[in-house]
Image 1 (cartoon, rainbow, N blue to C red):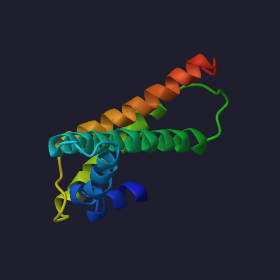
Image 2 (cartoon, rainbow, N blue to C red; image 1 turned 45 degrees about the vertical axis):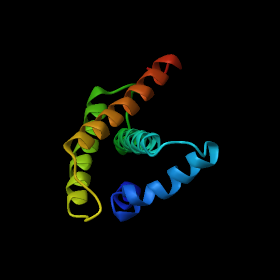
Image 3 (spheres, helix red, strand yellow; image 1 turned 120 degrees about the horizontal axis):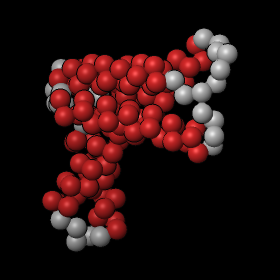
Image 4 (cartoon, rainbow, N blue to C red; image 1 turned 30 degrees about the vertical axis):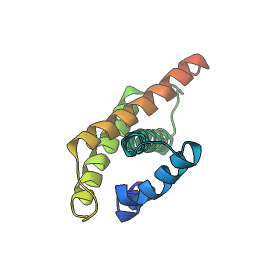
Amino acid sequence: MSLIFSASTDLGSVRRTSRIIGPFLRWFNPEVSDEAIATVQLLVRKAGHLVGYAILALLVWRAKRNAVPRQQVGWSNADARFALLVTALYACTDELHQAFVPSRLGSPLDVVIDTVGGALGLALVYLLGKTLKRW
């Protein structure tokens, strides 16, 4: 959560991330257009939302699972719902925080992307558990 919070400051603004992505793309192809750079930058930033919130959901899920010793190991829909709820609520507060940062914008669409990232992270752990025959 601290990492997400710090990325929601000016450090994670478009102006700052463009200093990395633009030169990197121009290193590969000096002829790359500004439009292409902007598109790649948008995709990288939104992928960062998905991955960051997938990790958050997994960590919340794991913390909830390990909070109380259990008799039976297995998937718990209640734990997954709790993790997704915490992830979605944190996404809301994160976007609210960004609304007060001059170089950032709070976006309801980003809350949706963040929540989808959390759901994808939980789906991944569920599918891995089924594949490994853990539940």
